Image (cartoon, rainbow over all chains, first blue to last red; front, side):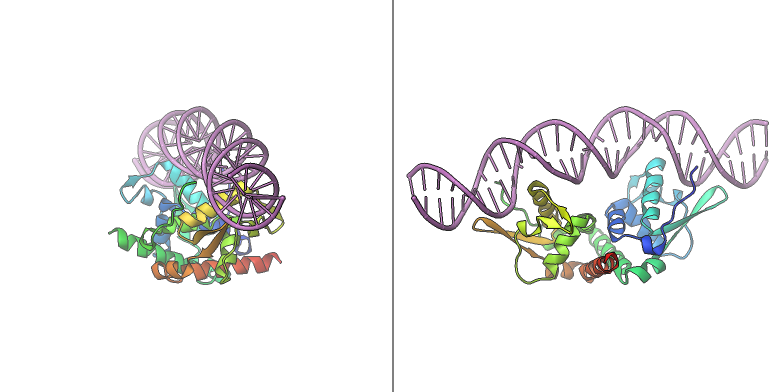
Length: 112
Length: 112
DNA sequence: TCCTGAAGTTCGGAAAATCGGAACTATTGA
DNA sequence: TCAATAGTTCCGATTTTCCGAACTTCAGGA
């Protein structure tokens, strides 16, 4: 298994962030991670909304979020602890993440 | 030629906006449109940065921006007048567009 | 009216990205 | 050492993107 790659702050690309969050599953995962202090495992998201996400797809989604610099994944025993990198991203692109999270809430509120 | 489709404010999706702006050419076009009051034609963007964009690709890019609700395109004689819909999007997703434009500037500044 | 040129759009095939099932790896606990 | 669990990797099928070529639309002459 390859070691996990996490870009440094300066290598984070706006393009990659927007692409990562342009998927409904990924933005849901990220919004959840950004809204909590405790790390979440991948399987915590095996279903998003009413959809069931296959393990392989989940793994890809986490990889995209990780390589965009949005989350940090650390192995802890048999599972993966995922946390958001909001604070770091905020330093590079001030206000970007809060605006997207807020927009995501606006849309989620409307759907309900 | 099919009539152009512009989504109404309430049909604008966050997902579509993020996807539209996750492309370097499109975010450059949109940042430019958002930063000026005067409408721009498509050919005004036939080159972005140092890259030359084929007409057919440009047309597709404008279509993506239009259908995401980010711009409005109106035929004026032989050409197309494109303007941003920032004010409308701001009403639906407050702060989202300014944050992305700002992030785009941060990145553009770094590249220079 | 009939050209001609300019501005975009549409078509279609090649290239790239995405999805998900099956097989694999890594780690813990019995 | 064996079994179970969490996640990754592989790979084929589907979907999306890219761009050249052909087409449409409109304005301004001759």
